Amino acid sequence: MQILIKNGTIVTSSETFSSDIFISEGVIRRIEPEIEPSCCNRIIDATGNYIFPGGIDPHVHMHLPTSAGFSSDDFHTGSIAALHGGTTTLIDFVTPHRGQNLPEALENRIAEAEKSLIDFSFHISPVEWSDSTAHEIKECIREGVNSFKVYMAYKNTVGLNDHDILNVMTAVGNAGGIVTIHCESGDETEILRNNLFNDGHTGPSFHPLSRPAGLEADAVRRATEMAAGSDCPLYIVHLSAKESLPFIKQAVIRGHRIFAETCPQYLLLDDTVYTNDFDETAPFIISPPLRRKKDSDALWLALNEGIINTVGTDHCPFTLDQKRSGLNDFRKIPNGSGGVEHRLALLFTYGVLTGRISLNRMVDLFSTRSSRIFGLYPKKGTILPGSDADLVIWNPGPENTISVKTHHQNCDINIYEGIKTRGYAEYVLARGRIIKDKEEIIYPETKGRFLRRRTLLL
Ligand code: URP
Ligand code: ZN
Ligand code: ZN
Image (cartoon, rainbow, N blue to C red; front, side, top):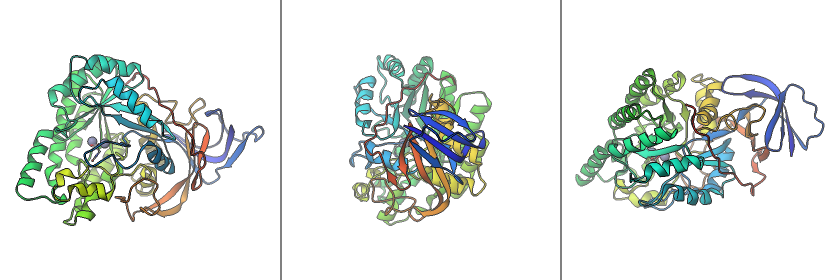
C-alpha cells in the first residue's frame, strides 16, 4: 500500500512546516513539498489540517484484574478507543502473580494483547523480590522490555516496601532499564483508609481524604532519593500534587535521570467532584485522587517548564456496576477511570488553544517524549523518513462534547462527560494503514505488534 498525504502542516516536537508525505510498506519514505501523485494507491488531501506523529500512551491498563472484575476495556475495545483519539501505541503493564516468573508473565500478557489493533509494549511490575528477580529483569530486557513498574501504594496487593523497591532499582539500573513508579506512601495510606472506615466514614468522598497530597510528595521525595542512590533512571507516573514538584525539580537540577508524567484528569478536573452522592462520586475514585485547582495550575506550569515530561491517561475504566462493589465501603471501589481516546483533544483544546503549551510541546507530551524515554525513538514518536507511518491527521476545527453516548471505550461512565473539545482525528494511520477514516475504523481486523524496545541511552 502506497499513500501520499498532500498539503498538510507537519508538526513534530521541534518543527512546524508544510510538506507532503509519501508512505509505502508501513514506513514514511519521503517528506518533501510537491511529491508527484503517481504510483499511489491513495491520496489524502490534508489541506488545513495538522499532521502529528501517532500518540504513544505510556500508561494504560486494559483488562486489568481487580476484585471488582477486569477493567472494562480489553485490548480490542481499548485500542479502538485509542485510535479514535489519535493514539497508535499503547504501553500497558504486566502484573505477575506472586511466585510467577516475570518473563513467563510477559509471554502471557503478550498473548492477551494480540487483540490490539495498534502496536503495544509493557512495563513489567515485580510484585515481590526474590533471589531470581534480578536475573528475570535481565531476561525481560533481552526480550525487549526495558521498563519496570513498582507501586509504593496498594500494599495489600501489588505494593512493595522501600527495601524491595531499592533492590528493583539497583537491578534495573545495572541492566540498563528504567523504573516507573506509583508514588503514594502505602503504609500511611492504609492506616488513614482504615481509620476513616472504622470511624464510620464509608462513602466515596472519604477516598481523597485517605490519600492526601503530602503522602504523594513524601513518596516522590523517597523515590527520587532511592533512584539517585541506585543510579537508576526513574519515571514517576500520574503526578497529581503541586507539593511533589520541588522534589522532582531538585533531582533534575542535581543531574539525575528523573522523568514525570501527569494525566488529563489531574490537569482538568478537581476535588469538588467528591460529594456525598455515591453514583456521582464513584467514577472519580482514582489514585492518586483529584486535587485542588491550584494543583492543576502548577501541573500546567510544570509541563511547560519541562519538569513534567509526558501526559499519559492511566486509562483504567470500570463500569458503574463495578464501582458499586464499594457502595458500603469506599476502600472496595475499584480505582481507575477511562480516557485513552480523549488525551489529544483535551491537550489541544485546553493546552494549545488556551496558550498554555505550544503545538510542538503538545506533540512532545503526547508522543515524542515517551518514545525517547522508553526506547522507541525514532521508529515511533516522530515524522521522519524511516519512521513507522503512525500518523494523526488532525482537523482543528470541529467542536465536540465528550459523552458516554458517543465515546468508544467500553464503559457506561466518562469522567469528562459534558466537556467541550475542539478538533478531531480525521484520519489515523498505523504502520501505513489508514485505520481510522473520518468516523470509521476501516481495518477492524488489523493486528498490532508487540514492540521490542532498545536498551536505553538515557
Ligand atoms: O486509580 C488508578 N490510577 N488506577 C489504576 C492503577 C494505578 O494506580 O495506576
Ligand atoms: Zn498508579
Ligand atoms: Zn495506572
